[in-house]
Image (cartoon, rainbow, N blue to C red):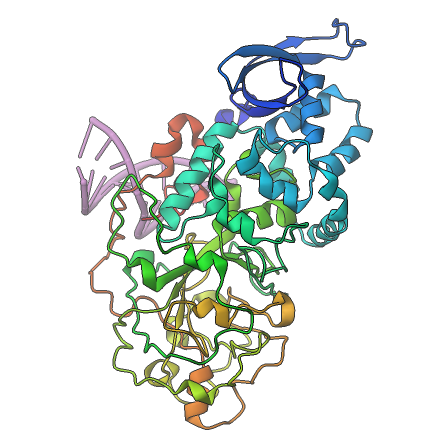
Length: 523
DNA sequence: ATTGCCGGGCG
DNA sequence: CGCCCGGCAAT
């Protein structure tokens, strides 16, 4: 019955760290080619450890005992698959906790890992300095019900496949924005790293310095598995954005570093990118985890966030299995484009808004979808549009944040938010890039939105002009979708089935497994 | 023939 | 609900 789930994945193919064969002390990376089980009769005090045949970077093969490789872990970063097997090798208990600390790594180490690989091993003085943060994270994650149970199985997933899958995922889901951290095994991508402060890097809150910026939303009443209407994710149309100049060059500085990322991007995709305009879109990634509304600017960032915070994993992206994909969605910030239904809007004077966009309240509020088009689930506690005017027809968004969910079946309805201020230059995100993230929060998930910060209440009666600029125009499902897609146009991109194959069906995204529309490789 | 996935069934 | 599959339709 469940036979296919019984297949345990070995660590073959996993990337590991191992002491240099030349003995010069510099650890090297390699890929596990084979494992020999030397059960209980090895010299190593009877412990039943395995010997790993590792294909080193230079192409040579070498055997390492588990301990040797384990040492590599502790010095650098825990690499997923081995971790689990190490559990068996060590005694129970102690290593477990050790793993929690050594393995869980400072965020910085995590950052470095993907690109550093062999290069920066052994620099862990920073680890200590961030351990507090790490602890904080643990607290957080423990307060959220995280399906830890699932992980154990996934941990053993073949790392290379996973990496590949994630690369594919990131490519296919966000063709417009490169997600830097996904340098599989090369040392480039330095820009974003360099942006960060030299010291310990706080991934989530230190938004102004790093490539990630974010806010977190304590709001609840929604969870990742919330179904959403059968919107066709790719049928949305771009929206006109009356490019407003001037106002609000964010106090946070020039512009988000991650932004210029997209210009000059020259990533090649193996398939032609469907007519989307680079310069007008900014893709953000939002955590869909229950009670979490974290939004990060890079896929890697959100994945790491999910991995560490929600999934409770501590290793870097190398050992991820792509499951994070299920827990975040892609948000497209539309900065300049033509709207189907909104094109006729008259621009709103930005001066209405607070002239100086204070980080905490640039984004006034949400309203929900016009009721008739909202996902069925959120029919409670919802009152009709307070202002009485229809947000859609009257609001003149200066910038739209178009939430495009990658996981339509489990995520949110598409919502577009006019930002209260923006630059035509596409740096709209600066406007809601709080220097310090958690001042206000937005629930991107279900319609009811909460702001904890100082925000203008939408229901407050103000001049319409004022209000509309702050009202969140919400899109109902694709406004008169041009294509008569009774059936979602067959995506021709890579799908889980193709990517992983039938034999790896358990690596498919859930939707694929259910024979539903694939949400991992949307196109 | 293959593949994506809708619609519907089952527990 | 989560899970699965028959069968249609696009390729």
